[in-house]
Length: 551
Image (tube, rainbow, N blue to C red; front, side):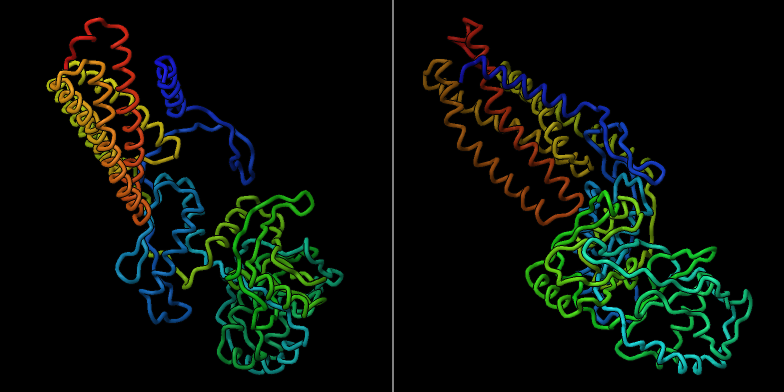
């Protein structure tokens, strides 16, 4: 290759590296006061990991409050894959997700800026079901038995802050179906829950509910939600509930006049299909329906969904996520195949992104609870940074001294190339949005030794050629040519090892592997291309170079 082209390529790589490493202000979509807007943010090319800058630590245990888990170890293994997928989708760089013992998952998130959202994403079960609403009036037929079971029941106090009253994502497949909204509950009905003690008495349950706008739908005043939830959890009520049916609260409330209601639905216990067949879910924004989540099912899921919805045309279908009905159940207008969408009912784009994230990553095989959470301060990594920088400086200084003392002028060329090697390596890491961790710094220092190792092979080969009486120019050409196979073999074997570490490792191990791979790539460029170019420049500029070489 022509010398001018070689110099141009080296300078171009330097310019590209400086650009990749230069902190700058970019325009990104960010959240401000609950809304997404375009704003200028500061881009930091190389971020630090949890061990260097701090972040968030989570310990997750199996939640057995809803039933015992027979094999915790296996359940944790399955949950580990889902949690890792969610964290990868969440976009945290260099996370640590690993199993500890037989019943705990440890999650470390460096530099996290939204701890509450991270906890929600990790902990959410995300079990999706499609269930048909009851059209047999099964609950109405069971009301006398339910009231009779509660006749002598006394509740100490209503609990309006029940988990059932928690608002989550409001959703529905409104683009594929249309729902009949012509009926409304009686907004003049008074609350029946007293602030203090509440007796069962005649009609204890039936007086708290009223028929909704579609089959299987019932409305409960928001102030009565806690009491109704307690009633529905009582063994004597569970025994007389209609068989083959389940009751699920809706995720959102509805305001009628000056009253707030929360609907619940009586659904067929057996879902027509579950989210296990989902292959993809993406957030989007529709000009007519607002924020939505579009999902795709695999071939088997599409076949089942099409067959089941074809059998239930004109029925209402509830979309149930983690036992919460997502918005008002739409009516099935025709058979549905592989694609559908969930509208977010006024929720922001981040809610759609999070819902798509957990649907893509899959549902947790067992419920998880957060056993421990800690914010780790950046001061914990300050000492590590100083020690890592000190170790790197010492290592580079020793390499420079050895190369200059042993190979003299040729060693100086290798040292100059080493400076470019460091610049190129950091640029590659910045280009891949890598995060600097303590193991990563160790990999970087190790790759410096690998970089000069290639130069040592070349220089020793040049010495041999000179000893055989060859001219300086010929010795340099032959030295690079004969050393090439050994350099490629050693670097490829190291790269394969690093690739295995990256594939099967996690957290700090992957950080070490990424840095090592970037270093190997940069060392191949500097040792073979850059040093050879330096020799060519020297040969063209110096007459003495035709007869002697300091090596």
